[in-house]
Length: 140
Picture 1 (cartoon, rainbow, N blue to C red):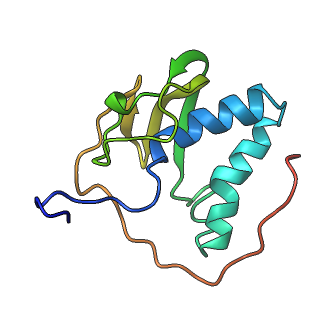
Picture 2 (tube, rainbow, N blue to C red):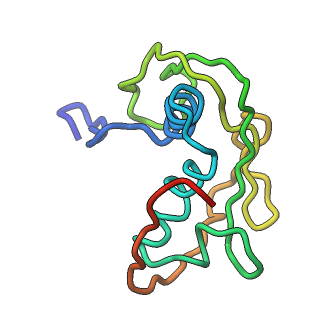
């Protein structure tokens, strides 16, 4: 807290900009395969944090968060569009291509056509196991 009682965020706020930047800079501009994006953003983090295959995979019994991307959406990153409390972004004014359109978790729509509909308390604790080595490369 600062002297006025305001929270001071640490680190760099970027969760809302991560997917548009990865799509725009990785897939669109550098030609990375979509499988690379899924591996880097879902499968490998689940492996590293001991949650794979319950997370990071689309399969029976997995607790998969499914995000549908509008690949052609043009956008400009603006802190005014963010839901966080930081009040700033490193990417203010950055042009991007593509954005999350819908996210579904356990049958519940959390993001609908770009609007956040998630209600507080919907998360679920998942006990983790030991890490599993991440997979390199982008091929399926």
